[in-house]
Image (cartoon, rainbow, N blue to C red; front, side):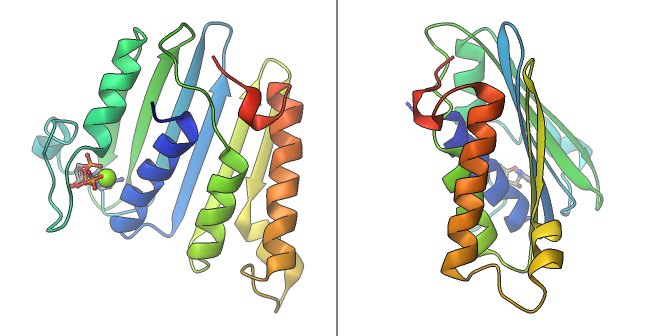
Length: 184
Ligand SMILES: Nc1ncnc2c1ncn2[C@@H]1O[C@H](COP(=O)(O)OP(=O)(O)OP(=O)(O)O)[C@@H](O)[C@H]1O
Ligand SMILES: [Mg+2]
């Protein structure tokens, strides 16, 4: 079973493949559900393709398998939730997956490592991570990190380790436990 962080990574990969340079990942815990939302400022999906995008095997990429969105939709619907896509041509895309908390809901996985990996492997793009639950909200923004470190690169090991530690702390604060231990 894929965890929510791996779905977040696959959605962010779609965003980067659509030439987005700003990707926002949001993980929100409600009383009875988890909402994973990824929005970007990429090329967008045109109206007629929007209905097809989450069909198994649908891909506009030469090397794409076309299973990223369809697997996410199946997993969300298995819990009684849903996947919704919204897009405006050339202005970006938003994917919102709702997972109802029950035995079919995937665990959260390691969102701190996922966002560190994205930030370090794509230093020219920016990533926001919004975590929220009834305990509170936290917002991480690589643009702020880059402003703070000035001429240093976000790919420096010291900085990437700091990002992971900071995000692990925030995850613990918002969701109340080590990232690996959180299940729905
Ligand atoms: N954020 C996005 N911006 C623009 N188009 C998108 C976005 N996400 C998905 N799409 C469109 O929907 C199609 C299906 O996406 P999906 O993730 O299911 O498959 P894929 O990325 O083509 O292949 P893979 O199975 O390797 O993920 C993509 O080929 C692309 O045309
Ligand atoms: Mg994909």
